[in-house]
Image (cartoon, rainbow, N blue to C red):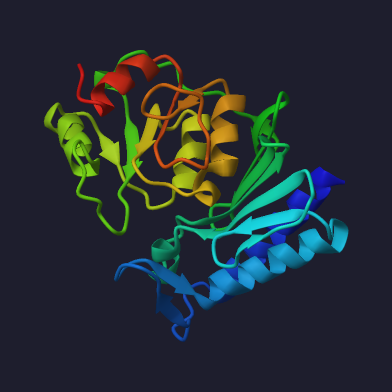
Length: 258
């Protein structure tokens, strides 16, 4: 029932994305930072997702990007991003998705990421693998950072910190390493899981950005940590997700220690 509800909730959100996409009258407002957008589609998708979950599991904890925490005493928490890649969505760029992770007693046990425009539905269950449209995923075999294709993202409000996003990005591109920026962390992580990218790093994510995607990478045979190489938690900002083979070397690059 948990998996079925996850599929249904993800599909419900995705239908909203399709409905509002490229609508010239789409209502858009701003959160912190001029380009940190929220649209009426975000709110409508979130509402559809939460209603679907609550219809089956009315007592489950909800943590969602727009409404925040709907706390209960449940051991289960649904971590929801109704549109990951809102700027892309608002500009008619079809690199965006619904992302939902399910946490049980502090461990992410299941996740789904769906880009309805590309018709790519990603699903992972802890200990059971990761899948794209029912085809099992596995990470790439690349063993060198210099030969890798990487992906990253920058925060909307840039934090003036030592060794920040621009400094890390500069190190890679000055060596001729291709680093893409798609605008959706959930898709970035799924594409690492699918072997399209060899590694992904970002300096500032929220739990709803990565809860589903990081499980995809791990279940596809990859490795996910913070920037210190410690086990990843979606409740801290830094993430490094790789095929595992370049992970230790990537840590050196990201931390300017190579």
